[in-house]
Image 1 (cartoon, one colour):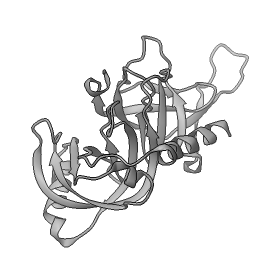
Image 2 (cartoon, rainbow, N blue to C red):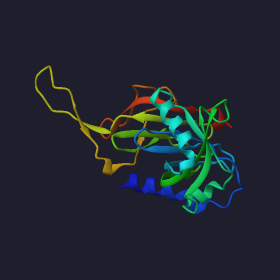
Image 3 (cartoon, rainbow, N blue to C red):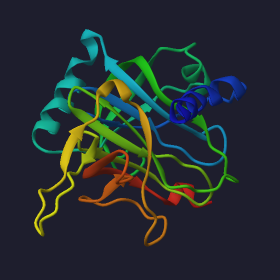
Length: 243
């Protein structure tokens, strides 16, 4: 129950507290194979001080060339794609007032030598995560875990300065069920998949060597509760959140 309350607070905090911001270009990282998500590339200063994950789709005949190029590059194994949306007030998207916007689609980072693929029209289907950054918060190394269609992701909840933004692909969350035995050799614990109906959820990554980004093979969660395995690190940015 406490986790659900915290998630609800994260989803509503920015929308209820945010005031109108100046128009700006809010770059976003695009990821997901079965479902497409857009993650705002945040900074601690306005008007970019928001952590926002959107479930999105694209529409329109005019954008088919860009979308087809995107699909072909993903099929070839490329994984870094970003969009540079039109000038807009991001709080309009967060509040649900703006549900569609135009953008330039890039292979790579749009500000770091990315290749423009063309224009797209982005439809916001769902706000997955929405919160305002607080540079004075205490870092707790928590991850917002979500997904559907047998594809799962985690994003580091940015909670204080300095921090980092990372998106990881995860295994289906699970709990471990172990069986008591009286012999020297016991059967290994059984993984019990967690129902998608319980997502999203917030899991904590153990801070053993400090607050560092996860690596492929790491586990996120608590052994006597819910766990998930890091399959791949899709995105990592630290410099923009170091000051």
